[in-house]
Image (cartoon, rainbow, N blue to C red; front, side, top):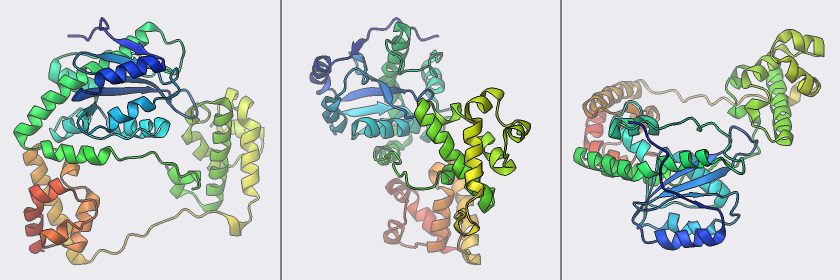
Length: 381
């Protein structure tokens, strides 16, 4: 069965409509929430639509038309209203980044699906599994910052949110039957506190895949190229990947062309890119090649502390226990215990619940459900 766009929804695009909406939903107990953003089209991404649905209300809020969304803050903050998201990490960060919205009583249906052992946890896959409904995702990669938005795109945006409430209820029932609802609630509480990374002082190469393999000179060139790309993207208001791809930057940092002829021979940039950015790219490479050796960057390498032989054996035992447990629960093993947590447990070897609760990143539900078994494994190693 296919989802249809013949749904009833209202567009909220001014402050008075927003105030009226808040008065209608402030006494609800559960609200579905979804977002549309423009990260595929602009340098600084922003939230372009907020979709909210209750049992009787389905609205699409236009934050580009309403400059002040502070009226929504109390709704998201209220503990007696559950906010249903799917894949909430991005949404939580985006709502805080753009509107300083904090979220209490969050429930993430994607996270719930993972704790139920679903092999595919995207919204489209979960809706199809639960309700035999195929969502139409043809507008997923469109530019949501366009104004006016075509009517069919707004209807598409309103579509997903209306399924979140019945989906959350269905997953909640299943989690409750399996005794895992409290596990997901704790994970959702942690998820509601994630925040966007605002540290702009670190070198750009620290978040660039492959940078760690470069020698200091090439690393300096890569950093210059990353800064060059960012400056171009900012001026053109385009995403970084639409200026020059990351693979191309890495190739340029290693080949170090010094003129347009050499740049063309590398084959890393298209003729159009060379025409638009070639001289800036060469200037960036040239400036980095002149950096004195003593001032070249060094990629930070954290040497893992040597693990004692006994601790290494405990890691093996914990992994075996974890994998057995995950198989029994039909869950991703990483949800039971991550690799990092296994290593921490193996090194610190807590043998009392009080000691176990002091382990960094261990969850209360993990202690409650598996604490005694974990300590039993550790006692025998």
